[in-house]
Length: 260
Image 1: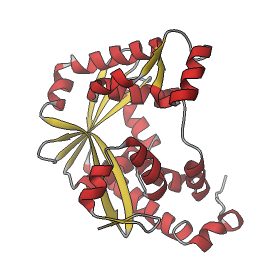
Image 2: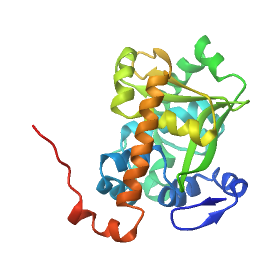
Image 3: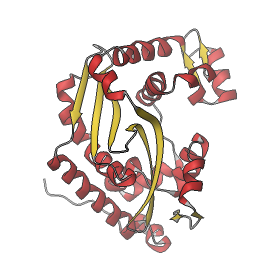
Image 4: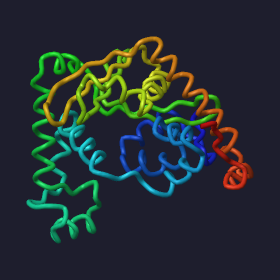
């Protein structure tokens, strides 16, 4: 049984079936279940997490990432998108966003950029081999320490042992080691292994400019860092956010301390 943060109870099979609906996954579950991105916000500060519930993350990097993922893993969805010839400043683009939502409207330039990046991945022997005999965009849900967590694996092997996550970067591929720590990808890897009960997590990285490909496996130490972050994030959530009274007093009681 999965108990969401708002107290709703779901049979695991029922909620997993519902999670293929993006509006449910990102909307309802975005508010009522934790995720790797939510836990990162909690670790930043309880206020950062509360803000994320009110204001969705936006930006070109997120638009590019979504389109690139779709171009590699869910090509059938590309035909549903509205493509505008011109810039985002164009009235036609703004009108389409107003009618259909920003996540459904892209410029021809954005589409072409995603196409060439996807082409670089799919035509690389090592990358394409890694994606063989796998399922794409598979949702997962689990109760961890009494809290509901959602996740969506970009790629997962048929035997469910290996998860592959696709990342894009504008930096040198060699610098991904530092980006992985900076953006708490260790937390994501550790959490996904728990949610999917998998054994191995691999990052497939593509440079958006040079189209270089990187494949990074996770060491035991990297996953240990991630497990520690997950544990700390859960403790932070339970202390500051689980109880409505404590949540209401965050602005009065929460402070970040340090020595310079």
